[in-house]
Length: 225
View 1 (cartoon, one colour):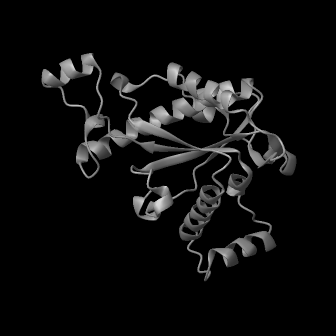
View 2 (spheres, rainbow, N blue to C red; view 1 turned 120 degrees about the vertical axis):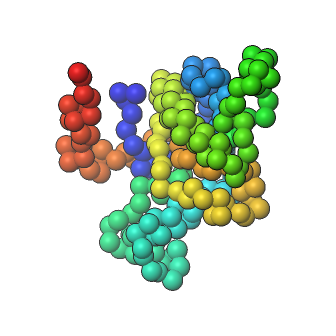
């Protein structure tokens, strides 16, 4: 992960072999821990041939930013043009050139292993098995978010070792009301964040002096008692 750098633009001239992506996904699936082994999340992978989903996702992220900033433009196109004029091009425009896009969502577990079945039969209650609209489902969202963070970090570690580049996007609609179009019918649970993978062409560090955009100091984050 020390080689990670945010990708502003992916190299569309280079093809990502599907086998490399599968290796990174398999690595993350194998080595990411999960509370009680439920893994109550999905990783939806959008490939290079899904141009309509790629463009639609960019528009969803753009609309989310416009709502969050309380902007009042008449159309997304007008807002997008304004951002370009003001040199405020969103980092998530890299969606348009990313060969592979991964959308992480929560998932209700319906298949349980023998030990889980035994515990449930013995009276144990697991929030990961409850459907949308229940308090237990909402309670399971917190652990799902932690686990997808670990999954994505493990995926990134392997992807970077394979020579690929990754980026993360959090500016996205998380309310399912914004995912009701027919082409998004596979998004059935609350989206959490987006991860992109491909070959990097232009990085954030190439546009912005890294010294201007540093993480908080180690001691601001880590409190050793």
